[in-house]
Image 1 (cartoon, rainbow over the protein chains, first blue to last red):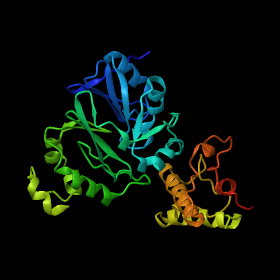
Image 2: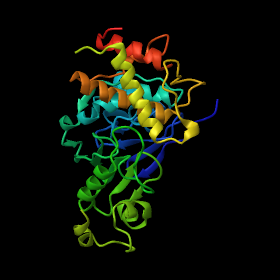
Image 3: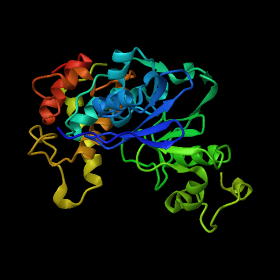
Length: 236
Length: 101
């Protein structure tokens, strides 16, 4: 049997697992609570994610889903059942979650999943271990999309990518809402925050806001190599 | 007012008409009960199927004044897919909404 690649440490205490079947990123994030971690966006490879947890010697304390698409919630029920971890999802994505299995069928993706029992994102703890946890509701990619800040990590789901824009043609996505969301959150994200997106590479926010040209065009921020933060006030 | 066979067909045809408006002449989906929606003989790709079904859900919810979900476990666990063609989808809509055939 082919050996799975080891989880990739993308930042201090943050590991990325790329799901097979449908390639999305799952993150395992150490908490400061011995042996326990956060699991963000368990996708379509719960077995591979679980192997990574074993390698790292961590068990999930909480499961966070940045939104309700199947590639971000597909494995959530597995971890909920195996570890008894609550699974958080914003309530505005309940319809999106309800369609997850239909999308798998429609897109002929060979993966079966159970729907997790969801705890509203607003009930997530304000801190875990010795670090604050902040939920940023970020509608646009889906109505209930969220970004999650924990430690130096910004788990951005499909709202903010290192490269490109988080638009999809799936129902529930809204271009103008995504734009308004990003513009409203932009100035609150520290340059050194590590953007951990749902697909593709992780990057410090400084790199995203200076090098992600498609995103800058989408937000109307083109024309400057590194737009100073106060120059963006008129674009929202 | 309950959904009737005629109104179910009208709603499905309207969703297909909306889809056809975005397609060129050769890709038009026929408005007929036997039109395949899912499977090898369907003219709809995955995204088109999702878009049509969500359009129909929205129209049904508007008409009935309550949220209607065509994409839940009930639809997916059936031996015969309700999404196979227009006829099977209309039958599923009637069953789900307690309508009349």
